[in-house]
Image: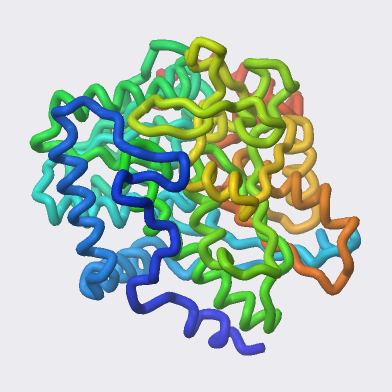
Length: 434
């Protein structure tokens, strides 16, 4: 197989036909809708009209591809994990390497597209929410490239455990606001971003980071992320000459899962598996598994209706995950609908399984995955040995793990890392000042 074969004929050169459009109310089956303050309705209507236009606009798609190719480094490769497949036995494992894109995650696909939309709408300021910091990083990068003023809201707990991303966002010129309300995680960052948008809606564009929120955000984000799955489908046809038997992706809000799944939705021979955060247990507050296990129930919050982790009074409950990007209390209405129809199987992986998956992938393939992506890896590693050797698994490695160095080092209980941090703390910052 020639290298040229792997990089040509992969990118979809025309706007893709989108199989995941909502009804006239913005609903996907029983989930979706628009539940926002009246002041935001004109902005959402304008965004919905623009989304309808760009889906059929080859010029927009070409501008989008140009940025993704020349700035973000697409297409990202599919890697055959030969050593890992041999170690586990069973199915052959392939990895879609979104970790190799600009800013180290799939998030850049979405923000580049939304940045182009914001520019088209004449907005001057971008706001965003972030959990793991990858969407915040991507938004800060896009804002610097396109010349927007930028503010990113991040739960105070996530600021603490994702300090490297906070550092880079601020260096890129973005204002990072640590949200101290509630559980101080992603859902609280979203609430604060929505409040900002309600106040500054005339000149501000909200670049929502996942396929959640009020219509048209779920469909818009999913459409922009479809580049990942369409690429992967073409790449596997070249490499294997067939479809994979299963496709795995982690699920927080759901953007990377919907991105990779769109290359294979409608292919009856491909099982789609979304993997939620199993956390450290099954009790409320110990996990962020909304669909797998049945802990979530339908509700309305943060502008839309979906499956939330909530109490009997409809109040959102605490969540937990070792991965900051997966501890969201809700899930994309599109995934909730696909799951209810049996088109996507929902699974979960525990914190311990995730750490084990990171160790195994690093040892066998030399790849350092993000904690979020490692949930999908953990579920795939669990299933692969029971499959046949002529079957193929595709896992979306949605991000790289350098952002997680503090959390991973703590999970590994690394003594040398502890000594390093202690030494730096004792030295102070004086010697580092320019």
